[in-house]
Image 1 (cartoon, rainbow, N blue to C red):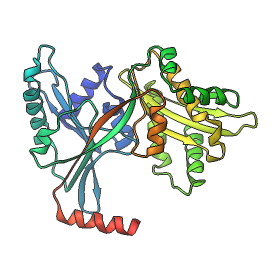
Image 2 (cartoon, one colour; image 1 turned 120 degrees about the vertical axis):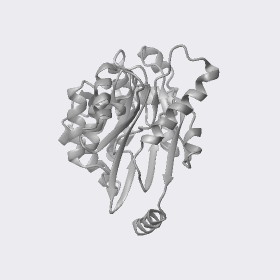
Image 3 (spheres, rainbow, N blue to C red; image 1 turned 60 degrees about the vertical axis):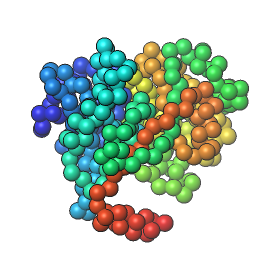
Image 4 (tube, rainbow, N blue to C red; image 1 turned 45 degrees about the horizontal axis):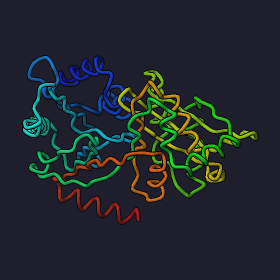
Length: 319
């Protein structure tokens, strides 16, 4: 194990307020313990900035990308308390340049950055490209009654409707959740995008760290209408996987699950992140929960003409 990785593991033990995707134990679960590393800026004893990354092989190409079911990685900067606003951009430039230097060689790089990263200029100056995407966030779930009042009238009506139709239960097993999601997707002629082994690895990791939970909606005939897998730290909770049976979509149970998990997380997480979608109908539903739209950066760089050609050929055959 690298010294930087050792330092980062010790750093994670002392921090209670990082997004869940940045913790070493999360990276172990989604990447494997030997398949990720981290760039850090640590002039003295304190880590001033860090950038976890995951590299994988695609044929003979080295790819730096996001692990599955991980919303973002990217740079994270710990700003000094006495840093003046006029010096903030220069400080970001210095930290990001140091992090970029430490990234390994690759043929293709692609990551999402957290929405708090609003300055990607140091990456632009190094030849990276950017696409803006969006997520939707309830910024404070400390007072659930206030959260509920911020839902649109139609969303509140749907939740009350679902309360009459289903019972809410927690802690569906990893196998049962996976099979439910696989089944609901197959009903829509879709294939599940992640393996049962990966899901169990994440499930076990978050349960062992009190950082995740499944919740599901069951009717009187024991039909599971929908299920939700949420992960969290104090910083934020994330709507990681939503599994909705199309045969029971009209029960509106998925909205009820979100409301119930928000109530259960009050005091455990500060905010609730729906993880975003560029699909218009999904985006509309997220907005109805009284969310705030947050823009985040998708950053790319391809240093290989061969890989560009390979991707185009692969996409052509997939289509």
